[in-house]
Amino acid sequence: MNHARLERQIGFIVEIDRLKRVMRQTLLTDRCRHENSAEHSWHIALAALVLAEYAEPPDLDLPRVVKMLLVHDLVEIDAGDTYCYDAEARRGQLARERQAAERVFGQLPADQAAELQAAWEEFEARESPEALFAAALDRLQPVLNNFYSGGAMWRKHGIRRQQVERRIAPLQTGAPVLWRYASGLLAEAVARGILADEDADALASS
Amino acid sequence: MNHARLERQIGFIVEIDRLKRVMRQTLLTDRCRHENSAEHSWHIALAALVLAEYAEPPDLDLPRVVKMLLVHDLVEIDAGDTYCYDAEARRGQLARERQAAERVFGQLPADQAAELQAAWEEFEARESPEALFAAALDRLQPVLNNFYSGGAMWRKHGIRRQQVERRIAPLQTGAPVLWRYASGLLAEAVARGILADEDADALASS
Image (cartoon, rainbow over all chains, first blue to last red; front, top):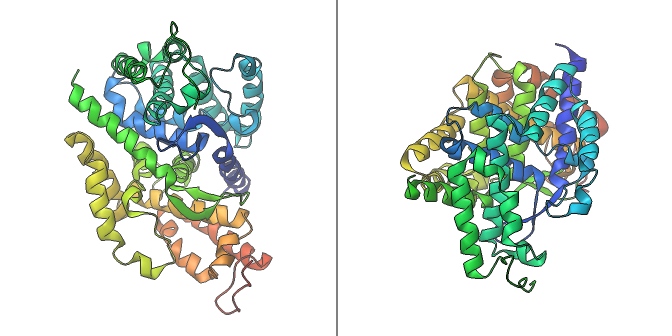
């Protein structure tokens, strides 16, 4: 056994415990608290198994999608979660995240650091079918949680339907069936008065 | 598109959000709070990718391990987390969990309900190499978190080294190298005074 190798691997596993403390804007469906990035990653990795038939093409490399989803937010350990509708915070995000990737993945033995950082880079590049499907799930789940928590965060931040539509655009190529489903959910949210339309006044925050 | 099928799949994905509210005895490494079962599932699914080389045999079906780990705690949505050292609470646990499996997985379309419930059953049976490795990771991670949080939960509940050793026994067959590593960590914990030995008086709780 190579003790130094195992020590690095264990060190990485202990380190990533910190992702459980990175909070997202999204609420749990019962609105009791905000969601963290670790449990979000679990949620969409399992969603990938359940919704794989809607990927384009449906026979893509599913374990590769799951691997990407399990690591896709690790950079937030250093870089924090950036709210997707906060244009100010998003500036410099990529540079912060790249630096974080070097440090966080760099705790692993070199071969595994390269492998998992490559998975993260592939996710970020959003070019392969696997990355497009992974991105689709990463965009779908907040829509579900926002919808089922009564649009609390949409209303709090005065988000409009058209902003969410732009946000979920990766679904169009990554999983068209899910894109149609999510679009229908947004229409329903507007009809229920929990998401504002561009033309309408913003809903009162609550 | 089969709307009823997709509705069931989405219903399941919304339902399992509740696992984020099931709390475990284990603390996060910085002791700020208890860990929940959703983020725990993420942690060990990613640990499976990092530690796969220590599985027996090392060329087992890793995606199958990951699938088991992603679903292994879903029954807790109904049955709750049962503290592994609480013999009283463990009575009746299997019956509760089996009933929960029927309901939770039963929200999916029949083919997927059968597939994911089979993954859970395989995990519970602990017979296949994949299930043994999955169980090993499920036992290793709390040891890491307990060790790195200064043994807070071991001390609070007056847990002895020999109890933890019995608990991590699945590591012996599922991942012998990790079993030796974990045993060394327990010896170190005793030496540091954060885990009591059978022969010694229990450590003062703190």
